[in-house]
Image (cartoon, rainbow, N blue to C red):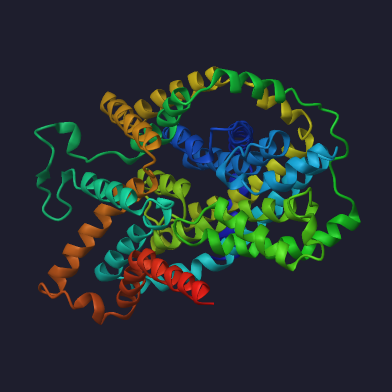
Length: 508
């Protein structure tokens, strides 16, 4: 994409309505991220169907503002009450809470905002620079490559199963089977519709996401609620707002430059890997920074460097995940999985077409990500000390608001009550999965990529007259197939390596 396209997109975005929706998204995202139990995924899932009522630029301004702000604001509760607001903020609690206890809470909140901004801007610039070359590479893709690409994406269900590979595989297969409901992708013959007109278009992805990550999470929090612990936690949240200075000194900023740039690079790279998220990126970056630090003994005890690196890495993941999603059509994380559905609803398909037929809107998305970082930087610094008040909102109030938004959002998608039913069924499934420790990520991947894999698998066989060798005769397809086999077999390989290490230790 050319500079002219970006310049035109920027001027079109500089309108009161777009900026208003962007600011609104930042405010909503800040509240969602700061409240433990809520997540950026839940916020995006709830707000996505509502954005279909707005012009595309306004809708994506709201979503980009919400996503970027929710990731940064997860550090607020991690710093003030030692409870990560989002999974990406796990490592921020290691040093941030200790800084707060040492009377440096304002500085910790300031570092969280500033270095989240740096990480987000760095990864978005990488998205702008490298997405077009990657997308141009996909011009050589045909049905075999897209089939193997979808299969490789499905292999990530192993990575998102968090140790429960069997449970994750079961849910992943269930998601693939559910993606078969509706019209046959090649023959347009109804399948598994049981005579229902509502099922002809298949199971809508957005209501499933809203149910699993919205009401499903609310049901689980209600199920596992402990009133005594909640009362004690609310008392602890009555924090002292006299948190000291917010901005780091020039000397501190200078010392943090190299470690945070490395953290930004690591976060972007990890974010581009399908199924890797901000929690993984921040933990890896924090660990690597500790190894390279001149003062590793301070890590975990209130290290400014440790908090800055973690804050940089978790927001740097966003640009990496968007790069994978927009160029290859594979979600880098659960949020980009929902955004694929959003783009589809707007009539756009991730991949090369986004950079040719929809180049103007693609440039707008990239610029909206940059603007979202600027807005949350300003908003976060202004409200750094007052943001602690967000933590005093009671859980029942949050649950009520989430449930109302879930119902409204599901119905608003197609003005169809059937989507609300799908949402409630998905909510029950999400609740059961949480109770019995079944990871929901594989189910989402299966539902999202199952149809893409099946349709391109059958097209590839038609093109090759039924020859399965077509998948290994094409170089890209063959490489993706090998990568998929390695991904599925990695748990077995890892067990063998661990067993040999254990044997070597005993022998030694």
